[in-house]
Image (cartoon, rainbow, N blue to C red; front, side, top):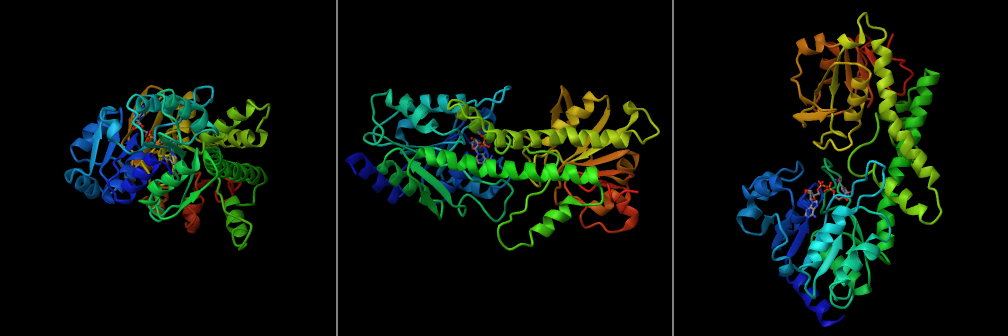
Length: 450
Ligand SMILES: NC(=O)c1ccc[n+]([C@@H]2O[C@H](COP(=O)([O-])OP(=O)(O)OC[C@H]3O[C@@H](n4cnc5c(N)ncnc54)[C@H](O)[C@@H]3O)[C@@H](O)[C@H]2O)c1
């Protein structure tokens, strides 16, 4: 190790290293708070003034973080937030946690990583360690970030240190948090890996070193593509079960999951959403094309998952056809617009896509309820979450469960409704025949309904 590496190692071990986190979203804020809780002076940088204002007032905006913890580290001066890169040169370890969305044509948009790196480069100081956490295609760290940093004249592995260490946070997961979820880390040189592993170990119990950043980049994509492919498989089989009738796909998966080895359960649904599983496969497909390689399997999975909101739309239209009303008069109440259970994140939520598709079919009376999401905007229309009441449920023609929040009282909802389309098997425990006959369950051949 050279003198820069040694000095940084000592600072990290002594907890005098100053930590910087670029991007204070679902990934960056929990990470920054975790370092502050462990006693590291941490600075968060985000270009969204609303987030900085909120933190400046001691207010937390990420559901999984304890408000009191955020207020405590802010008041103790262990954590501060700013909307610019001033004094970035005073930071020792800088994590990049900015978004990696795709464009309208589903190509990677790495502009956030690029601009964050350029901003870091304009304040770069010898002895700094930069760790990219945003999910991206292989070779982003060495092919994009490293050249921008080295254009300053400082060399990675000698003057500065660079690694890729993907995030695994699962918002809403009470059991696995930032601290107890193992993570992978690959540096450009062995010193980069050693320092990045050491920095991560200050807040994360298990850190697994891999040979280089490309392995870590590919590993993260494998994790999410694994989920995408398996969800696509059960979605396809759910459609087949609907076609055949008499087989409940949810029961099939539960039964298969009794095998104690070689099977991991995945369940069908109205589609996938969030900032990861929907997007990440496209990062790899796009990158693979540079090698004259079509990731057909991965693309087919993404296509299958993206067909699900259309499938759910058709389920609704099928029920509408049985109502003695014109389509424009039908009332649909959507339950759950977050992309998954018990979170407030609506990014790429399949529920929003289903509402958009139903509007395009001519349905005018669509409302929604979500205990975590107070308002949404779709196709230029603003919606506010409506209160659930016996009256509202009774006036609604079709209840569509798109997100199975645990707080919903499903028996009560079904009791006061006339038709419930369940895309999540949220009504699994309902056995009362009077209630069952009101339910149309995705992937069951509509067997529950008379
Ligand atoms: N959300 C998850 O559950 C999750 C899990 C694992 C990995 N990831 C990956 O982590 C990355 C971040 O995801 P997220 O969900 O935290 O995104 P997010 O949108 O919640 O947060 C990103 C933040 O970065 C800020 N930002 C954008 N450009 C910036 C810049 N140049 N300088 C400073 N701040 C900037 C934005 O204002 C935003 O607050 C993505 O690559 C994502 O794929 C997310």
